[in-house]
Image (cartoon, rainbow over all chains, first blue to last red; front, side, top):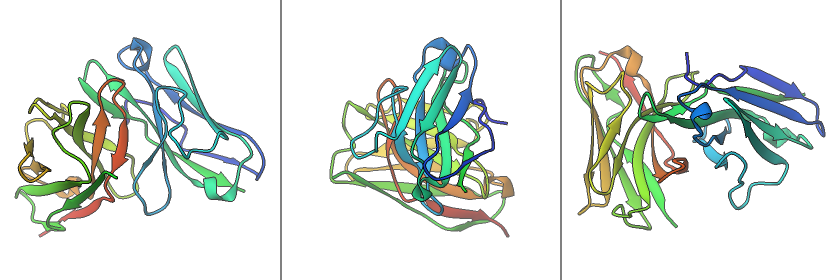
Length: 111
Length: 120
């Protein structure tokens, strides 16, 4: 059981929009710690996708966007493409654990 | 361009100590803007942060692993290391080393990962 809660799976057809939620608590997201998102393609290391709730590193398409409100955050992917099929993880900092925490991951399937 | 590479035994016996090293190339490990950390991923499961270390030597550990984990820096070799003692099959995972920024504390660079299996 991860400290941050994500849906195990989401799916969408090419071109559609999907969102992935990440729910925390008052000791992490709700304590004003930023949320970050990672994309993990099969057999590879995670790659930073969104940092500081809504910022994209250089090279990440603007089809990917992030937001945060209260004790939750969301990753939105628009114009879904086959290459977006991957596992997505949210991450934040937890004051009670004094360290980084991850969500359990969400598998995105492009139909 | 900064790169990280994990190295260490791929097979460790139960009750023994797992030792991994991360070699940083293309930049200095002694950067005041960076933390260095270890994250693992058991087969078919999610990511779990293990430990982090600052260039000053300040460390932080995931509470449930703290009694078994040591993270250290070797600035002369531009490396940092992980030791996990008294391993069991539950410690079987892909182990990643990564660079973590100062606040807001995200992992912006990752190694490719190394598979560690705990088995007799």
